[in-house]
Amino acid sequence: MHFVDTGKALRDTLKHTMRPLLAALAILAFGLPAQAALNVCNRTAHPVKLALARFDGAVWTSAGWWSLAPKQCEAVVPGKLIARYFYLYATDGGAGGWVGSRNFCIANDDKFTIPGRGDCAGRGYERKGFFEVDTGQAADYTQSISD
Image (cartoon, rainbow, N blue to C red; front, side, top):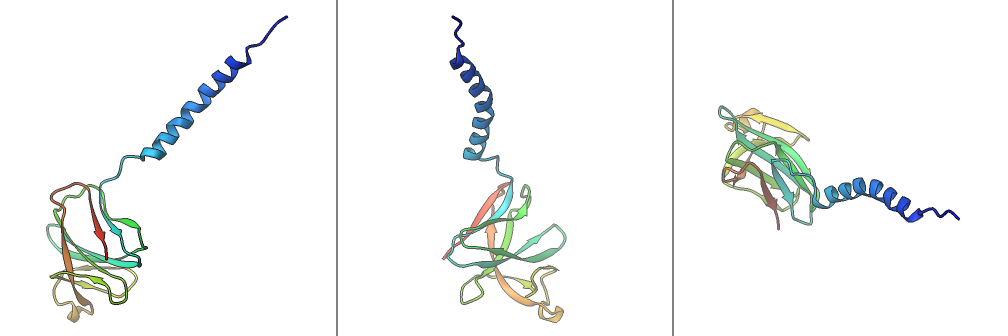
């Protein structure tokens, strides 16, 4: 009588098919390396609209809008951060707002990019106070918007 070792064949098959599967599961479980960015997370129960202002070494520029659903995060400045300071303005469209003392221009359009920060009204824009985000020279930083 001749017996076939089906257990060995099964072990070999599982070994060759399970290794790639386990590697894929490890990547999903631990995640891929995060990309550097200025991330903003909406930790509120309401959707928020977000505007960003920054200095590129020559010109101040404000831009918007990023729409963040509750509990959503968004990379508003992708890539390694070079600047230390950024400025944010956020609103929930109702009574809620996250403001500060640094004035920049915004537009009510769906998207805007506005060079300069002076004479907002004279240029057809609205002036809003943005709050400062100090990244502490980090290459990657996350700012939360919360109630």
